[in-house]
Structures are given as C-alpha cells and as structure tokens.
Image (cartoon, rainbow, N blue to C red; front, side, top):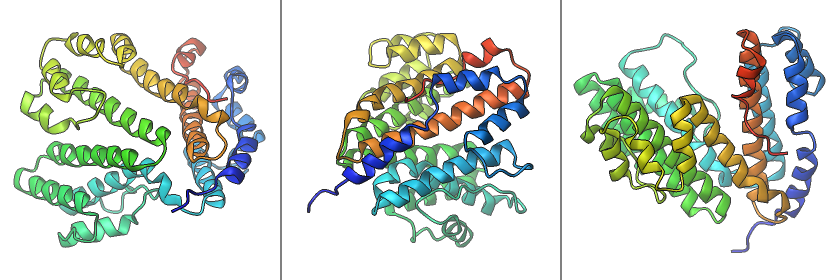
Length: 323
C-alpha cells in the first residue's frame, strides 16, 4: 500500500507554525500586570471566542479543539494520531468503572477527546460487559472492575488501567511508521514509569506493587527501577544517571515541577528536526505536540498570575517553545 502524501498538509502546517507562540510572546504575556490583562492579550492574538464571559479553562480547551479541527481538515485518516488519544480513552474507562461503583451524580468526569465515545465506556461498565472494547482494553477493564468490587481499592483499579494505557501507547508507537511517534510513545511510557516510581517511593509502596504498576519499555529496565524505588531517596536518581534519563535525575533532585518541565522540554527538543521534514506525518505530529505544549505553558502562566506568584517563580515553570 502506498504511503499517504503529506506534502500539502505539511505546507499548511508550516504556515500555521508562524502563529505559534515563541519566547517573545511569552515575555509579552509575562509583562501583563494581571491575569485579566493576560486574557485580553490572548484574545487579541486570536485565542478564545471573543466572549467576555469565557473562562480561562474554556479558552484553553477551545484552543485544543481548534488544533484537532485543523488537523481533521488536513488529514484524511486521523487514526495516525490515536497514540496521542489513548490516554483519554483509558481515563474515560477508569471514570466509567468508578462511576458504576460509586455514581458521581452528573459530575463532568469524561474527556470527549478520545478514539471511543465515552458513552461506550459508561454502558460497558454499567452492564459489566466490556466485549465492545478492544481486547487488551477489555481485559484490563474486566480485571479493574473485579478488583474494585472485591477490594474497594480505587488505587488498585487505577494501577491496572494506567499500566494498560501505557502498554497501548507503546504498542501504537512501535506500530507507527514514523520515528517521531515511536519516540513519543517511548518517552511517554518511560517518564510515566519514573513518576510512578518516585510517587511509590514517597508513599512506601512494596516491590510487588511497583512490579504491577510499571510498564516495560525499551529505554528503562523497570526491574531495576522498581528495586531502586524501594531503596532510600537517591536510589532512583542513581539508577537514572546510568540511563538516557540522566537529566531526569538532576531535575528530580530539584523538585517534582522541575522534573515535569524537563519531560516537556525533552519532548520539544526531540521534535525540532520535524521543522525540516516535508512529506511525513512527523511535522503534523510535531505541530500537535507544540500546540499542546503551548497551551500547557499558557495555563501555567495564567495560574501564576491568578495566584500572585512572582515573575521569577512563573518563569522557572515555563516550557521551551517549538518556534
């Protein structure tokens, strides 16, 4: 089968990249005195729907929706982007199982941006019939559903579904015919494993718990990571220092927020070469990731302004930009 031709789509994306925020735009936003002034500047730059009553969260979600709508205009087969949406699917699966166990009374707990309609998850959980889901997802759902009802342990339910989500993301990345999608999947799974290991070390989780929670990947030995997580603080950093995640160890020694920033910056650094590709899905995926990074950075900046943080405190949390 011939590979899709992305030349036109990439050319359109190149034009859209011109409107992406760079460091100078972030400095303009930083110069705003108040949260509301930031919102007005974002409106002037085309963010939001122009409504005076639009909330910051709806403004940011609107930008995310706009990004996906623009991709749909350019790409015929949107399944190539499923690797970016599986996390939302598994979030919705988790929400449906927990809602069937303890109804949320109408709370907005579902993410509409997935590959499967959230209603499918709700119906499956209510009927305790997960046959309509993909096999791997259905197996994880059955295990998590049974665990929750037998033990009442919501954390165990989370572990089962979260690991299955990481396995699905990694499989999709490996199956994709593009190195950027493969890198994204590996990076996502590896950094999620590191976050889990650090969290488990802080809460004193057992080695058995860690072995169940961590998802195997190519760039980390999860057995060694699990063993480090049951050792005193510093053991995880010592192990990471012997891997390609040496930078993660340094960031973790500073703070959890520094590590989150390192993860996002590493991803932006690795997608930079896509600016020069011409006929692959890579530049489109890179633009999607750049937009997600941009939205996250604006959220951090707005939150800092709203909570009265100093400019220095906000700047140390801002991400590197793609452009």
